[in-house]
Image (cartoon, rainbow, N blue to C red):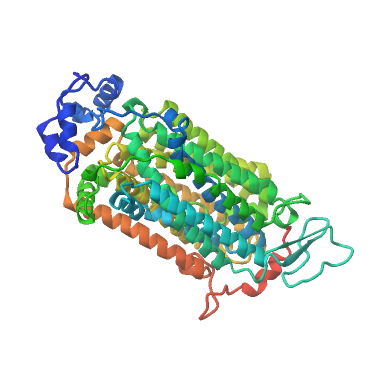
Length: 617
């Protein structure tokens, strides 16, 4: 193979004519030596594994193989004027991880909300991750004073900081309910009680009670998510621009390190909740802890501290050729959607994640009622998960950026699925140690992050100049939207097992038949997860094949419509079903156990409070 220097074919030129800077790039690439950016092993490896594509080795060349202004990950972490982008990922880890870490102690341990309601909340407070395409297109199309990224970073983080501060103020105004505990750590008071019984109390604390509106607090977190997505997506677009300036054998490393930063601060937030929220109110044993409002003020400060980096961040004014009318940008986006390779990537992200992201309903109930997991142990589980994810992303970015994406995905899926079998030891009371439960949870996030990174790496090879944010948002929106749909499927499957999805808490989980229902739930979810392997062929094997597909598969209007239809259905169907679950969790349609006639109140609501007050908390 003449892998050092190959001209671009006429067919390739025709297929890429819609990109704004394509002709200039083609003229340069046709005479350049690409050895520095494309390794011999990568081209020969692709030829050996995909012999039907051997005649298109020239197409394996990177559109961005000629780099006039190179940049590396090292530059972003040593130059203060470039550190605004990685600091964005630190802040995303703070707010995204911080909001996620508080859901279990607040909605499970204090409010004792139904399981499907908790599932819906976890999706709703991150809902705008499924709408990244709109943020990305806005950032690509509307430059503010000649800049497409920095203004959105500043606006998004300012709005998010304000919304988090409002959450803290609201919770502080409602932390007026006294909870009392006996020597065994059991709650012995009701939300209406104003004093603890004499002679039995060993600890008392104030927290949110009957005056706290859980849906209103979810709405505040919802708006916070709406705000910081402006910054997150702007940083994603900038990261793709930087990826185009990385040498090919390192491409993807900047993005891998960015996500390492994000998950590092996510770990810090879970660590904070593990120890700061470990009083008896949250199933722990500490006599001193942090209030929820105090915790929210920490989230506020965790975002505000990075404002100086975003303020001084340098961003060159965008090339006027890349800032065209919205109508023209929509036309370019439509041509991108019609590309068969890009549409296949979107379709893969939706279908694969719809199957592989389906989880077992009632996992929080298992943790609370069978294992007795405290807030400390629950959040340590989150810490271990994100530590593992951070290591996996760093190792992949450092050592495996040129290895098979299909193998990475398949290994993660099979490992994650069969780890679910270990949960049967908890279900059938073979081992109900809280630390064994923590171990079984470590793998659950790794698969999703491997899928996330491979989608980003594939998108780097297909994102055209001027549409970096839009292309990446299309790829990752399909991923996020599929996860929203999978939450509905999880609730739907869980609805087949009424003891796991009722609002009765410990009363149902302590029934003998609940164990069999949970086991059957695990078996069905495993089968659904593994079915995702059927669609693995849609994912490119590696960078070379991703570029080759993009350059040789051509365009098709039906593919564009199919891509739009799948993503639209996933976005809006997943959104509507999770919102419906939020406001009517008892409905069997959304995985509930049944409502009182004409209402959205659980038919068994009259015994829920009694059960809640008799649990081991």
